[in-house]
Amino acid sequence: MALIGIRSTLWGRIVRLSPPALLVTLYLTVILAGAILLWLPISQQAGISFFDALFTATSAVTVTGLAVVDTGGDFTFIGQVILALLIQFGGLGLMTFAVFVLSAIGVKVGLGGRLILREDLNQSSMGDLLKLVKLLLSVALICEAGGAAILAFVFVPEMGWLDGLWFAIFHAISAFNNAGFSLESQSLSPWVGNPVINLVISALFILGGLGFVVLADLYETRQWRGLSLHTKIMLYGTAVLMIVPWVLFAALEWTNPATLGPLSIWDKLQASWFQALTPRTAGFNTLDTAGMHEATTLMTMALMVIGGGSTSTAGGIKVTTAVVLVLATIAFFRKRTELHAFGRSLALDEVMKVLALTVVSILILAFALFVVSITFDGLFLTLAFEVVSAFGTVGLSMGATGELDALGRATIMVVMFLGRVGPLTLGFFLATHSVARVRYPKGRIYLG
Image 1 (cartoon, rainbow, N blue to C red):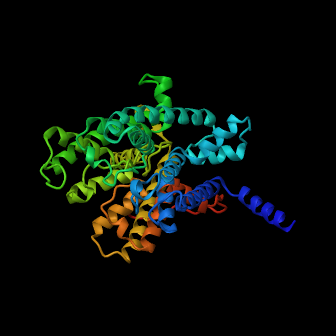
Image 2 (tube, one colour):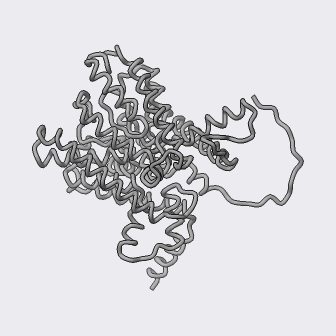
């Protein structure tokens, strides 16, 4: 009876948590369960420590891709399957699968479940959430199956049917979910000049990073005038963040002997395309990231911070956030009191949310970099690259992650987790809503 009472008390406390807190608890539970499964002897064959298994599970559920072990060599087939499932759960959202299963067996999703689902999908309202879940799973299944089928034409001839098919399936799942995990120790570098790999993998993480709201809008509307403001901003922002970095990467690295230098012109264009897109939280690489020039490294870090779209498998502060920041800056210098884009205006609360998200993100990055730098004596830029990659849930690495001590790796895990659940989730969890009882006269401060 006492045990039942303890369980009921614990369950009651969990139920009374706010939706953001429940979402955080859900993710932490899955990460811990995944770490235990990856630590089992049946899942690994290299004597991986529990801490390394926990780091890998955190990286998988947060769809980051940073690794401290060899994914293809240190995990068995069962371990790799578990890792793929963790990537799938983390990329599409844990509540998405829970709601889908409950709906499939005829269990009605209550208000509490819809609130958590809204937080998990980063939505502002609860309308059409179940429809969005069905669309999300359908798009994911179609894209991953189609991507795996095409990738099999490359991997099967090289590795045989069983290994080639599994290689194709795993990389399709990892690519669509913007995870960046690869069964090859050098990521996709052996296929730097393969057009199928460069096009299919990039197409998968572009589709996954656009966001399911955008994909649904494109499918249902199919006319530019009828598209929502969010979709238009995402499409324009994504196009700019694809073309401009592609040109800049090629220009900066064209003669670099450590990256593009030894390649043919066609391979240089392919590699530049891939490396310009992958920082927006995909995490794969076809070139040696550590060999890039410092200017290219800084550009890559900026792209990692921006990330992909809302309600997508990508991380970062999101493309729409970056666009709104630019629009707010332009409006300030033009002395406008409202933000306009595509014949629509943006409300002040949206701008305030963007500013809050940006400030919290900067604070997380600065504090994490400070903590990790306490015990790491390597190059500062290399360390900053790892921290930014963790926050953006990208997975690109310049080699510093494997050299970090326990404190450094623990910090990276926390940063990956915060990058996945979102800085605003942490803010809403800590914030309290209050109504001002006293109004004060307006004051003036001097800025700039």
